[in-house]
Length: 296
Length: 184
Image (cartoon, rainbow over the protein chains, first blue to last red):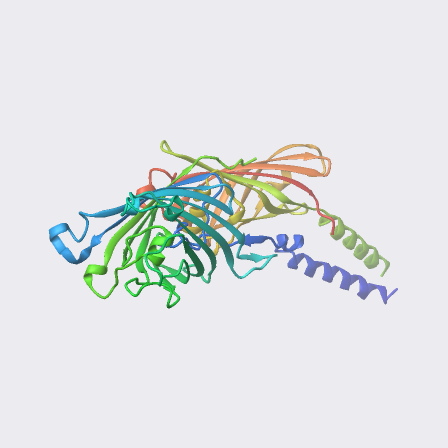
């Protein structure tokens, strides 16, 4: 009998402790891990000229208005190049959250372009932990400008160029993202025999968020040596992303005036060495939600 | 001696009975509505967790901010990136109790008006809140509902001037939870 009593007292005491521990009621349910896909590595699906690892979200139409101005070297006379602009108007559409299609038209060489971009790996944390995002991009461009030599025999295929690009990137921290873009450009027609039809290049791009709505972006495309004539230069661009609700404004300086891959990777003759090679430009992205997510 | 023993036994039994039942859900629904003449914004989640202690009326809610779904993908991105900073503050929680628990009999079917108060944590900021709730007891299941309002500025969420007419300063929050007995 006497031996039972301490046991009972102990039980009561123990229960009191148990009650005290149950302050945190939710811990009774246990932690259920979910997979979280990392998003917003970049503000929009372009860094500056290069495609970023971001896709256009499902059902969203992204209208792009891009300008690249004349060199800033003329100063006030042509308002730092603003009197002359290369323009690209484009539409991007999110077929799904990982598949984007797009088309555009640039004033330079009266070029039409179309692309398809598929994100096949997504950086994630939680239950499924994966360190980076990877996407594949295929672009075709068609120069519709009149032939320089109409007298000789010209082929339609000579107007076409292609670009294949793998985009591998990671959002390292909330404010820092980095990506690499191994690239192959194929041009059906090149100017001289010395130039390669297939050109290999490696793009690198990063962004640093300066505030919630402003980011600093930079990108550089390194073309592997001995593929192009010496007058062609690698494109380097630096700029800001400014996001205001439904718009993203990308303002930047670049030594490239083209806005489609084959052109800004393999046909860029300007360089940062002098003011004659530096151009101001902008991309404006305006999104329209065509298909709303069903919330039920 | 015998008396002490009986008393002890009773205590043990009472103690057992008094915290015998806890109720829970992992599929609680939380919605919020921002209503301005320019824009109506709403978002929903169906993965809020809740535990209610049937012995004393204490309750806790938790919800992952990233689980809120918006009609527009960009809104969802901005909600997480710019307003809620869901990487920094992944969860919102509520810890509180039913103040008039004496007048809520969870063992008897019926509809009870409950006064709930406690601490609401959003965006890393904790505030005391109180609201009315309805608890519908049906067998061993509890159907809980509540609607309350939250001033965005109270929780350190700043709305930039460009969109100040698009986002309401006071957001309506609706909570629905069907609680089931928790088997321990």
